[in-house]
Length: 117
Ligand code: FES
Image 1 (cartoon, rainbow, N blue to C red):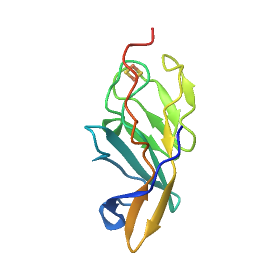
Image 2: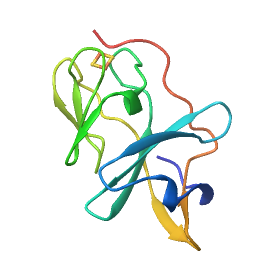
Image 3: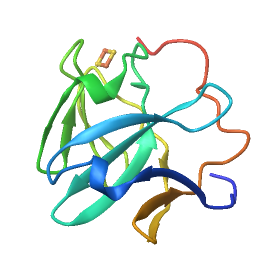
Image 4: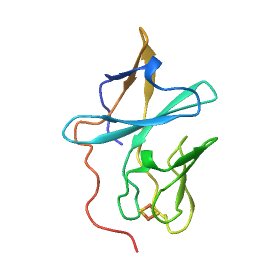
């Protein structure tokens, strides 16, 4: 991941504990925001398997399950937890300033094209 400036993406009041949403990270890039255990997490919203929107999956603790084929990821570091997902999801640094969640999304953050079989 390249270094990026923090950008305000969403008021913290819009995400409840244990929930996740997708927000516009710029350049048409969707960022998944999750709040678990009082901590904030941000990652690409596209599954590394066949690019499903991960925010429509399910979140149990730190385990994020993809809505399409059951692949799962750890939202703390994007690591794949089970097949068919094999590649990690890119994660981004977060911080809270004045009630707003800021995320350091690289300007060049664009999901990789192609599929993983
Ligand atoms: S698209 Fe996510 S596991 Fe297949």
